[in-house]
Length: 141
Image 1: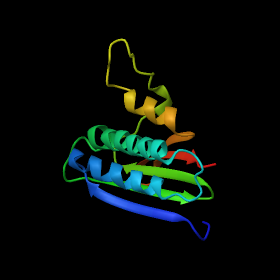
Image 2: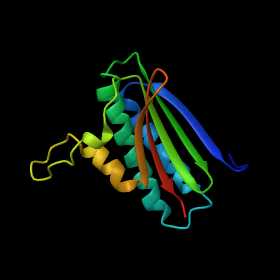
Image 3: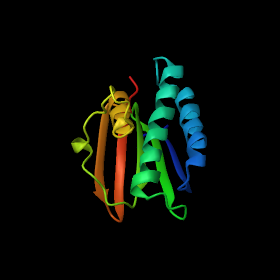
Image 4: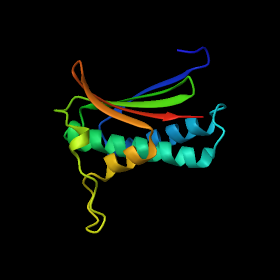
């Protein structure tokens, strides 16, 4: 990791009331990036949206809305790339098997993954020791 890297490690209870807090942390980080030459407000909005969608999925599906579980988020900025990892202890799923949402029917299912894939440059969901990680990266140059 480079010398000026930023790493933010957050653990919050598995409850939706922490969504706006985590979203705002992501926004604040995006607004402070000195390497980003683009529109910081848009980046901040996108990071908030991606974090919120990923957390909702972890809370609802992976952690089965169990308030005793934790949501673990790691935000790293290094080498001109912002990476967000959201860890869960659920069964896991194939992120590529989720079809795009049917916007005609205004369905909610699949919308979060669709939004995340639309905003981020790379999205992976994989098994790790004791659970899974959703890893989302965005190039900052």
